[in-house]
Image (cartoon, rainbow over all chains, first blue to last red; front, side):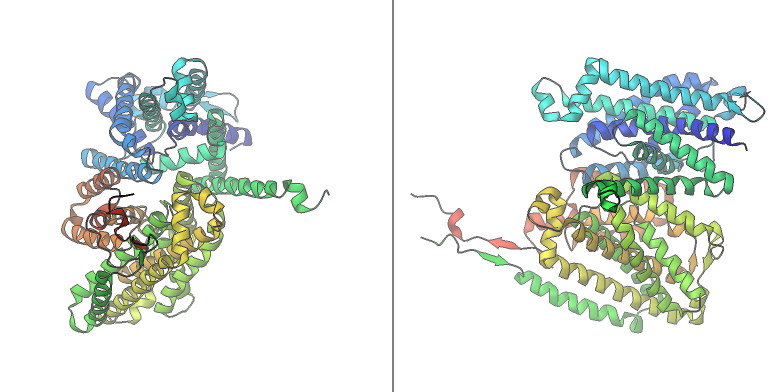
Length: 300
Length: 340
């Protein structure tokens, strides 16, 4: 594989990771909750799309239109019924509760649909395999490009929404300081529920894209959570565009690793994540000692 | 007038002295069980001890130090892997097992430098990523043969009955040493510092608690304990399969036992492990529904009974069997009406 193609494929894969990470990042930013069920909710979305388009014999894209509001409702319910009680009791309780939710969701999916590996690829016709031959070295799959475009549109739309609408401003104010936001008339309860609804709907969207570009089964969720988290942390927590960058870095690392040995796909991603964390810590350590140069004693 | 400073700080209660005696008797009975009990009892009790170790270790991390790790399977798996490596290099079986756990504890030192700088949920998933990375690295080792796995052949030097008894004693000994270590640590000033960190890290640091060093001690102890549980599991099953030994389900079990029993209490995780052991024994074969049920139980406990079963008992009846904290018994000044 040529270098140009490698970089292009890695970056396009990064678009999927950014799509996946967007909701995780939003929930963490607004509620300070890391939703350990995020990956399983994405897979739940994929299953819903699969079941609906299979049952009514319609395009998965049409099914997705129906599934997004369902997923939003799931997010809203999750926040109102579960996370709301745990928000004020520190970070331990929400982590435990979402971990329990994750185990419950994946095993219920297994109970309902069995261990079969599924894919939406057979249902989307040519889109599953058609690609644009840019040159004889570089071909770009339409689906991968679509997913990347979706990620950019979602992240862009979300940051415009947060910046320019009154609801967006309410969400940002609540994220900053919920108590003070309450004082100026923001209902933080419903803001949290709306943020959770958006986050889970985007997870469902990402899960559907996973199902179109690859395969999924009831236990695919945890790995998706890890990818999403890696993208968020690599890109810098709290930055939506950083998430896109983080996704691209992760996708590149995995693609480059896999060219050396297919078994290194995942490993290269994990090690890049750990290396970036390590680098960041070293930077902090150096800054606490007056900057990298002075800590190494070169300049002064 | 009663003297307002006339309070009593209790560290042992009468109930706890009695329970101390009871614990001593139980330990003696457990120690001689392989000599008198059947193979089935010995085997099941070994499993129970492994569960108690896992629950107590996760409780030390999350319930006392506030470190919610979703990656403790890293140490459970890597300890077993080190043991396999040692025995492949010619070490006898049981020293290899203990050496494997020590190796995992040593590995936890550099890991702690790294992971303990992450906050809250970042630490949780960071540990998970670490466990995945270690799992994949171990898969690369030709000795392990990828996901196929391998077995610890040196264990076959012992007859089945011998192995059963040795595993049992190793498990019992590990459990007692680890529980003892936690008990002593928590009763020392260390116990107060570590809980201060859990409740408010900045405030604890302001009071002069060495935050990182304290967390690191708990982290390494928990790594060692989880690795011991991992090598014990290897000793009972003989086979090592990366997917099983590095499975996230170990952490799920730990969380569940500690949460149901009572996070942040000494007795709670032991009770939780006992409950889990009974439930696993009764319903474990029902697989998927069973796992879904466990997940739901975790949600319910996290939301409605975050102190767990033992926490509720302790709170309601004031029973402290093995007290690790300080209990302040005040004189009657608060019962008396202020008459001046």
